[in-house]
Length: 336
Image (tube, rainbow, N blue to C red; front, side):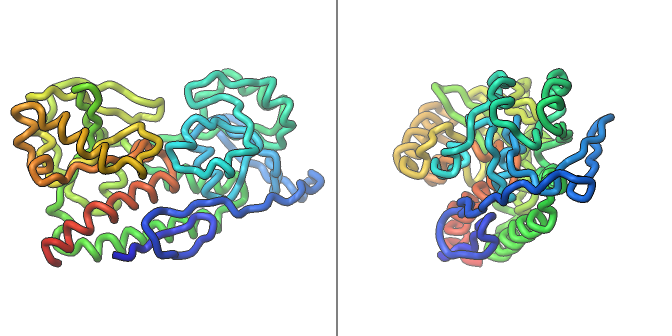
């Protein structure tokens, strides 16, 4: 079936099987900084004079890097650790210098050498704000929840002077959601899917945390939100209020949904779907309870990538790709 896909930077609909976010943006030379070419941006207790046309941007945190790329802004420096899992073309990141962040120490010397005209980060970097602000105008943003990625995406767009572009990106995402919902029809609210990670017999359940990115995607898509109680505690992952729950083999029936998405750190996920699928089914099905799961019995266990715990429009559209790819064929098989 031909899917309705979106290219963030092309800002148009194309046909195909995956989300197109390749960069086609050329940064203009920075104009002279005068009172007519800057604006005041408030963040926390600070006010920062930000150029209307920054062309040497350094980004310190992954959510903001994803936002910038989605807006067509290629920074001169940033945290590159997660770009592979966002399926960013290596050529896109070729000229971006690793400056730390995303669990790596931030390298002040590298940032200084890049001569940025704008530094963007999260409030977690308050301890080095005085240093950063002496290098270049620095804005530290607040992210309340990655579930509401649209909010910080628009905030980022405001700082970069890309509000109109951001609104188009969000509108196209919402258009894809409407297409997905219409194609699912009556099965939309009755189709239940869980997101887990299986590794060496350890099962982690995602989607449960109220502020999680994956739960926000499911709610955007209108999918059923029936979540069984889990007795285990939480193992917090990342810094931005995202969590998974460790579950025992005895609790596998709590994820006995129609479809199981198996979260994997395999960067080559698109080339190993069949192999990974069989491996996951074998691991889950090896227990007496796992073999009784409907998704296992019907072979409806599918690998998904790290973008399911992402934080912005690139991740959101990749996750939506999975819903189109795996859920719509089930709908077609059952009729509309």
